Length: 310
Image (cartoon, rainbow, N blue to C red):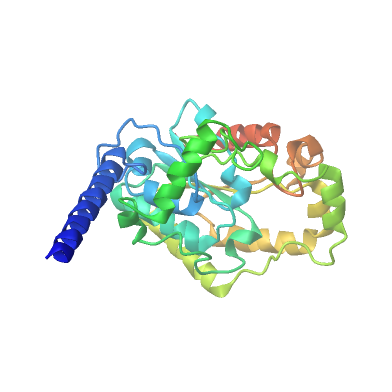
């Protein structure tokens, strides 16, 4: 009898604790999934893929009218400084087209953006398939209680108090999706990194994976069906790198241009008019990722060149 009573108390206490935790997580609503999200300001603290996927359910489509999409090369573009539009950066570190498509389509289930800014680089279509389990519908219920959620709480505490700035800087993410990874990624002087890349026999993997091509075309078709304007740009590579691998990179750009024919405004930042930018190494932190100066210019130039979207 005493044993049964003991386990009854344990069960009741455990159930009360778990329900309390679920209630706390519901009202805290870290990803804007369960309560009114309009006008909220939500930043990311951990697991960029999971966070942006969950934010795409409500927070992003409710509060923003346009998206930036692409791999890490566009992830540090900061749309918060753009006064004319509310743009969310849905780009993700290391993302391919499979992962990017899943997050964008989730946001479009609620409402379609007016336009998207699409970063074109061979990395986006070099392969296909989910690289992690971080983008998964089951993550929705994990927002009520999961290892990932409590990890986010822990890193929010660490970042907000700047306890580990070299690994988890306080200002890495903002509420517009910008991943300010510059201090984390820059490991050596830019020129040294470029020289290192130039010693490689092969440049970026410019072959477009056959499944990735299909997924890319499907996403573009979805944009067209929802009348979403596409502003696509070829990410500016340092001039010496682009010049060495010009043949394969130009072939890639021609193929992507053909895929987007009559579907998008296309800006080629590797063309001659932008050599003043790609030859200036202060625009970079390594062999391709942009510095604060570089991304500021690029963001403004994309909107300047694509003013036809208004």
